[in-house]
Length: 225
Image (tube, rainbow, N blue to C red; front, side, top):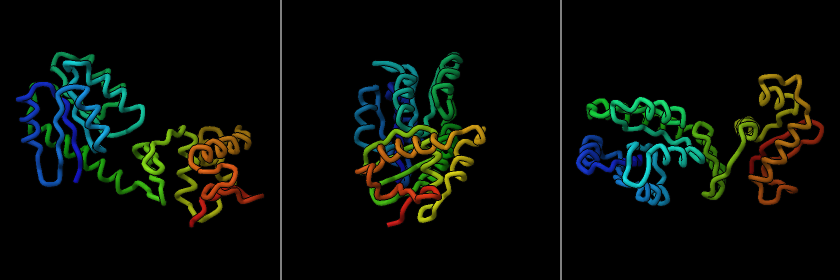
């Protein structure tokens, strides 16, 4: 079952949206304040959020910024029809879509379903290996349920190795595939530094890695247990 959070301080509107979207495959959590939404996020992993911009204890844009620091979960903004700047700001901060008030519930339902289909597709493409979960589409990486922050370069290296797990990927191939905008100018030492940082974030004992192994004279591999 997919999880949807609605952050809307207008009780009647929030319940109307909830009724319009409710179905057997969707669990909906309705919040009226930022405080309620933050608490809900600590208890549930949501697949989509609908955020009102103007709230009693702050702004939905503020909450959007908080979430984007650690997650690529799809988010739809609800804005007043004359607040164009809210729309522009929201999209620049990472919102996936917006709906202006007043709006058609049928249109909202269609846009919600579009985002949920994308979320389901991304979930199907995520990779679970032992205690690790790597979701490269949403840029979410966890170990034993704990969030791991990876740089873009670390993500690229991890993705190549995980997609080729059990096989050795040469150093030159990794450089070509990670630094695609000018690999000929990259010092191979950059690859060693990136691997060291990745091991420090993923391995229990980075000096004796269980997964991110060096194949001496060739390159690296994600070892299959």
